[in-house]
Length: 310
Image 1 (cartoon, one colour):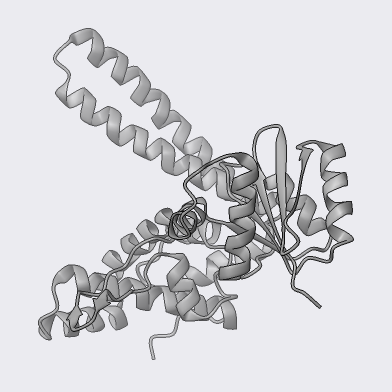
Image 2 (tube, rainbow, N blue to C red; image 1 turned 45 degrees about the vertical axis):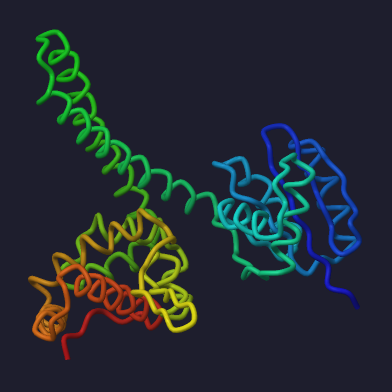
């Protein structure tokens, strides 16, 4: 029996679908009727994997419909699909061609299927993302206020800063209410904050940005956070190993926790100092601490065990 791979390109009003290896292509509207037609047609083909490209939120309802129909689903990174298309020499870009590239990417790469987050999990992630956006705006506006020479501009910036500062506690309260209302999230947060260096905001950010925490192996979880090193090598030339990709917000959160843990966590502080004594640059040592900390947190949630120094 042939393996069947489906690529779906999502736009605001329409879904373009490509099926491999049959090369069947069709389009449906991105509404209730179109989604029903989509899942009905796909179920008759028993696809091995349905790949949907992440498109700033438009893909959520599509992914939910596909997963709800009992089909194997992977939400794929647009950058990875774009790089794949360039690698196979496909530079033209239309919605049907994009759907074909997504299907070919799914067939060649076989991204691991992921269960779609439920509504509460998505809301949690959106609140955490909104908190991050407010902080970024606050930092930017305060920098502009320091540089502004016009009294009127400074007053305008001050008003906006005051509004953002008022909004931040409200977002924090909404996040706290959501966490307290979920026994699972509350239990997971309580576990994570037992680690010296991990505070509530860091724990909540990690739970929102990496819902797979505790359910994947250490290499997979490091890759999701962009902390897995990759080697550059060609022939006799060998470059330095580097990190990159992954989920930037999660990586930033674990770096903040690692920075704190390198000073106050008895185990990770010793680990950090040992790396420095071995001649490792501070940033390299901090990356190693971040990766080790993430591995520890992943194991704690997997085993449902709090932090233990010994």
